[in-house]
Length: 112
Ligand code: AMP
Ligand code: ZN
Image (tube, rainbow, N blue to C red; front, side, top):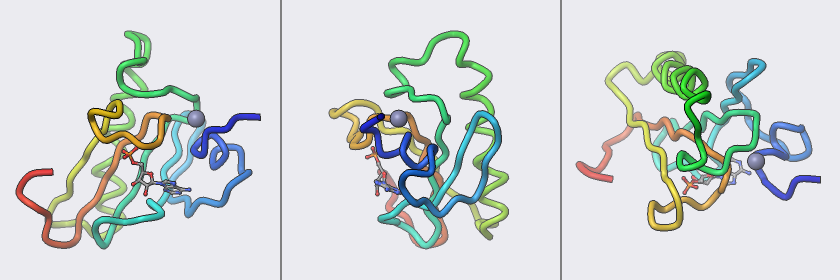
């Protein structure tokens, strides 16, 4: 059994407040939101980080990015939002299953 918490959410072994699902991607609310709306978009397939992505992940990465404005709109982020991918410990990554943060709705710091 996978020890990865995001794989467990994909498998339904851990609860997640899901907001979107298709064959390839899953999106859910971050458990510790840094803004009024804070979503995570992940591939269902376990990929550690952006470093492990290959040329054949191009389509999946594009679909992750294109899902962001759709979910932002659906969650009322009409004034804009921020997308972040933390990569590796040096990049502040804490969960080693690729994820795209989508957050907004409050006053965000100028840089993050
Ligand atoms: P990162 O630093 O980019 O790896 O961020 C990992 C994110 O996952 C953090 O914002 C956490 O709050 C979030 N997180 C950790 N565990 C869970 C969980 N069980 N459900 C939803 N979000 C989670
Ligand atoms: Zn995983």
